[in-house]
Image (cartoon, rainbow, N blue to C red; front, side, top):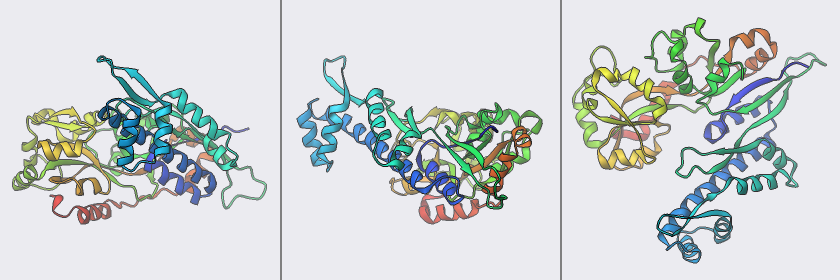
Length: 395
């Protein structure tokens, strides 16, 4: 039996939703199972957010269950949900002798997932069997969350001759930060994940780190250094930009300096003067990329790991940040916050492959043909939508 094709996709979030919707339209996976997978992941995300809120309410309610219940009622929470959460959540003693509340422990979430794996609904059972637990490293306390693990499927190409064996494949939930590394090590054959991770992990295979999208990365890729190839965009409406955020006052001063809207465009960019000597807030996994694009060392630009509420921090504390902007909704509803200039990097879901594996397994090629990666650049349309959303908040 031939080896299954290993296809990396995001394990959670909007990116997973978008990719799964596309794969349903291509006939790779059944819509009923995908609907159930998305439902379970979203319900578990709501569970984590409820617990996060209850931890804060517990601290503000004298570390007592009934007072926390009353507070939750005032905020409109379903009291049955709150009661169940308080019964399963962990408790511990702090240094002051107070009983503190913490997220449901791993064993508790495992019990919840196991119950779903034995649900009477067959689609729900199959969906639950495709999930596993993962620590949410983006939240304080690092709660356990249900995320997509893997699911097997058989794909019959539309033009396949009757009786031809299907393409056997596995969808595998893979954090996008490690996807390119897995492609390089032959631990994945195909990847349907965001471009910015490829930029981040292929710097050693580029003749310059100053690339801003997958088109430019492909043009500057040293193919002898890696078997990873970007074949094109998956064609989803999921663009995002790594944008520079500032308070309104600072943004106006930057605009007055002149220059193009592109950051670090050419020999001299007057906008960089405003960043000189600053501690720019960022997600630290992108520090090396931002440093290369902005010539950070030459301009005296330093980086600092940003807080969770990075948008509010920029607006209220007059800090500068580089942060991911998708639709612009968060920026639009944060008073005094602006996006300055064009994005440093633009990202979207791409189709990438390990070339050596592609050359030796024709079934990978059949899946690539089904995906039909596009070379179109829809970034100008995304920028136009962002400009319409932000108005004078985009300078």
